Every structure is written in structure tokens, then in C-alpha cells.
Image (cartoon, rainbow, N blue to C red):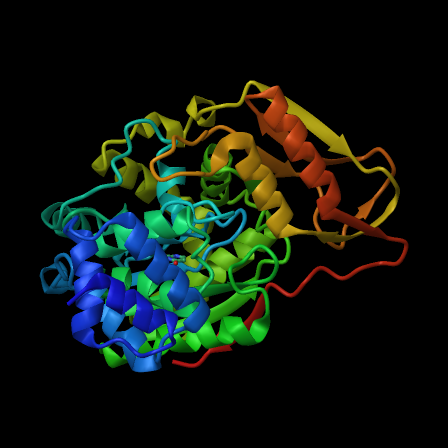
Length: 435
Ligand code: URA
């Protein structure tokens, strides 16, 4: 079977067979098919799409490219969650320890940055020493021992997604329902959790800008998970403005820890609470949604998620002192504050522009394997719907390079819109997909 024929068939909009999908995906994972052929195939998928059963087959092939974990030795229902990616989305770093502190084990595989959006794995690497690559045995042992794992794809776990993901990041092939669905769900199926809660982002800072596409992505992923015998719920949530206040790796780790301490921004805390509630409920940790929510809120208020985060950081070789001494996180050399040029209500903060401005500071990759700057980013002082006075601080830019700061500043300035009329903040949760 020639790879070039497979690319041509997808370029012509044809449905590929399981054998063809295996040839390109597993061949790439083994290092036998070069980047340039896979990049051409990915671009053809972006334009031509895939049939629903083709996406399901691709997902199964990717999940089976490494080990598929059997979590029965954990002895309890394990929960997992995944976001499709957005700006300031540090949700997993809060939800995983929080749900584990509620007594429901969480075993989760995340990804690095993709396009204009940061990724949990890169963010976690701003904790000195934190190991993001675990073997299947390490994953299982840790899950059994402390009830929480947060790692990336590895040679053992979803290696096909690890390779495709890094290539998509730098070839403008992220925005595709079949590619996102197979990437997310291959990790979920390989990691083995019985409960999966999906957070599908919608808006300018998401890969799905409009609600119908976001719902289609949610439905595709729910169908794949359900067919594999998992309990899956999907939320479609707002990504028209950045989530919370911090954007950028170390800055987001800081905000995640502050949130676990009960001092997080209101929108982010509300989202974390809602997703964690659903995970506890679906895993049978509480009999109904009301008591699941009460359990999550009480756990958050008691600070038990912070204790669980310390255990997680320790288990994965990270410097535990960071959890209590946030000043040990990487810090940028320059912080510039931008002020409101006029008074009024904040009508929009274009999330994508803020994401691109953060990439411009050095937080994203232009080529595979590029080093990224973990210290740079933004801290928002006001959010959509807030009343601002002329000259009031709007946003901090944390930078390590003057030229990059200038480029970023121009993008940030263009992201803001003001109104002389009161503007309502966007609804945080747009839609909840049925189980
Ligand atoms: N998250 C993933 O794991 N993969 C994608 O393609 C997008 C978000």
C-alpha cells in the first residue's frame, strides 16, 4: 500500500479503510512514514473530513497504538475529563486533584499547546522537576496509590496521538472535528476511565468558533465514548473571552493553585465546580447532583484539593514547595500594565487575540520541538461586563523580550472593545449534552 495513494484518496474526499488508516497512523508512529506525508494527509482531512465510522476507526487505531489500560486493580470507578482547548484554560490542574480529594480517582492524559492555545502538559512543566511522561505501570501504580495522575502521551500511552498532535500544532491542522475528536478520545480510551466529562469550548479562543460546530464535536466524541462502553457527558462552554484572569504557563499554574485554595476568579471557580460535580456524580461518588455539588464545594472550601495537588506533584517528581510558595514558579523579567483608553463597559476581550499575543511573547511553538517560554503571559484585571474608568488597569503583560512585548502589546490593544451601555458577561455554560 503506497502512502501517496492514501493521501490522494483523502484529498479526493474518499473514505479510507481501516487498513489504510493503520498504514499511515501506525507507520508514522513507528517512524516509517515521514512528517511531510502525514502533514499532507492531515491537511486533506481538514478539508475533506471523515465519515463517522472512519473517525471511530481512527480513534480506535490511535488508542491501540500503545497500551490500553485496564483500571480494575484501582477497585473504584475512575473519572477523566478533557477540554478541547482554549485561552487561560487551566481547568484540569484544579479539577483532577479536587475530584480525587472528593474520593473519586482521576487518571488523565493531557496534551501540550496546540496552535494559539496552551496545553496542560506544558503548564505543568513550569513546576520544576515535574515529570509528564509516565509509563503505563507508573500510571497504574500512582492511580492506585494516591488516586490522581496527570500526564502526557508517551511511548506507552497513546503514542500515535503524541506524534500527530505535535505535527498538527505546527501545520495549521488543528481545527478539524475528526482530528480533534480522535485525538481527545484516543487518550481517553487508552487511559481507561469509566467516566469521561468533556468540556467543548466555543468562541473566538476555541477551535470551534460557532455553537453548531461545537455541538457536532461534542456529539462525535460522546458517540465514540459511549460505543466503547464509557459513561460520557459533554458541556459546551464559553471561550469568547479568556477563562479566569491568567493566561500563560506559570501564571496559570499560580491561578490554578489559588483556585484550589478557594481564591480563584469567579468564572473559573464556577466552571471547575460544575465539571467536578458531574465527575463525582457520574462516578457514583454521590447519589444526586445536589449532594455531589455540596461535596465538591465543601472539599474546595476545606483546601483538600491543595493537599492532593501536593501529593500529585510529589509523585511525579516535581518540587512540592512550589504549591505553597508560588514565587518559586518561573517569572518574567518585565511586567507592563495596559490601561483603559476610555471609560465605559467592557464589551469584548477577543480570546483568540489574547492567545496569539501570548504566543507572540514566546509561549507557543513555531516548529516541532521548539523551546517555549513558561514565564510569559497575561493577567487580566477586568472581564467582559465590568465597568471601567479611563486609565484603569486592564491587563498586565509579562514578557522576557522587548521586541516580543511590542508585538504582543499591539495584538492585546486590538482585542478590547468598550461600550457606553452596560454589557452582560457571556453565559459560561452554553449547553449540556445528555448522557
Ligand atoms: N485536545 C486534544 O487532546 N486534542 C485536540 O486535538 C484538541 C484538544
